[in-house]
Length: 146
Ligand code: RB5
Image (cartoon, rainbow, N blue to C red):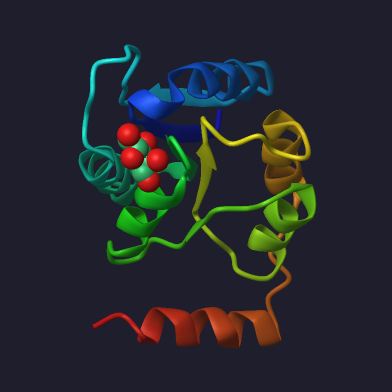
């Protein structure tokens, strides 16, 4: 069974639960590091916890959520080895995997998406990295890390 690590702040409790339920329906084993209440937490802490867990190995990908998805994706992208996308729609979610080979996808719990975030997550899951010239570009992204 493929494993997925999920973490969110208080700004995305409901969306996190929706995506977790969908991941389980799709047969993933979900490790949810929280949170499940509206009590305020700091999104960099949630990103750090999820990325550290991902880096222990054995995860297919990770899902991060905050109010906008912005803060938690910025935080994740500071961590060595992590490429986190914040897609606008299904197309971007699929391309994040096909061209950018991201290992995390982020969502905003307070964002009105033009398409159902569940379908965006599906588009991400069902896409495959194309390699080739995209591998060269991904390598260049990772070489930017200072
Ligand atoms: C928390 O209020 C909010 O700032 C956070 O969820 C996120 O939107 C930050 O980018």
